[in-house]
Each structure stands twice: as structure tokens, then as C-alpha cells.
Image 1 (spheres, rainbow, N blue to C red):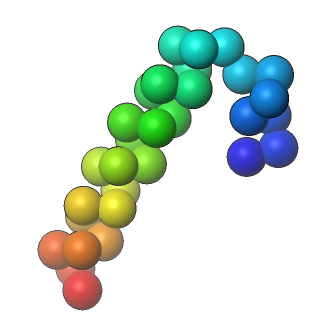
Image 2 (image 1 turned 180 degrees about the vertical axis):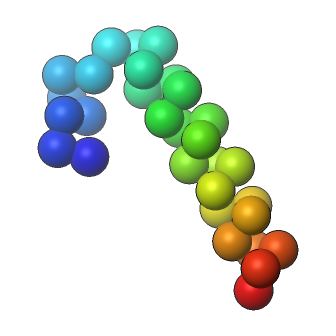
Length: 30
């Protein structure tokens, strides 16, 4: 995340949500 510092609060929240969902999917695959 190179633009994490410039990201808006809303974008940061959205990215965090997607990251959490991705981690859950990875756990299911493993």
C-alpha cells in the first residue's frame, strides 16, 4: 500500500474490510 498515507478514511476502511475478507478466504483454502 504505497498510497495508504494519502488514502481517505473511507478508502482506508474499505481496503481494511477487503483485506479482512481476503484473510478469511485464505484461511478456508488452507
